[in-house]
Image: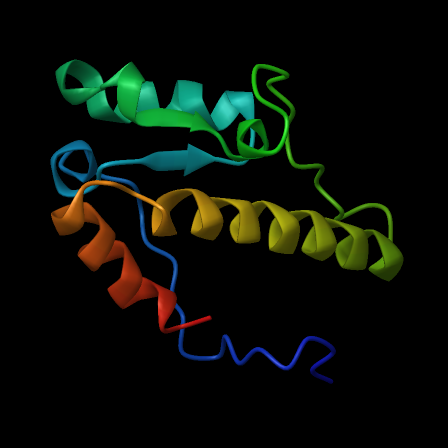
Length: 114
């Protein structure tokens, strides 16, 4: 059943690698412990200026984790989806208005997926 009409069947997860700090301008984590894990993996390539908790885009400085819906049943998954959808819309708004043309162009390429 596809409630949000988004096909993610071709998406694949991968392990974070230290070179991601060179590859990406911004890295979002869903929870504080994930930032710690990323720091441990990245070692000397860790760049605290490039990483933040995802929910800080909606609630700056609150350092809120995205809740794990695993133990709370299907309705919790729907709530987390709504949270993620809202924060992703905020990120799209933020970077679509970027004054830096090269970064804006790169971001707009990824926006075509939405």
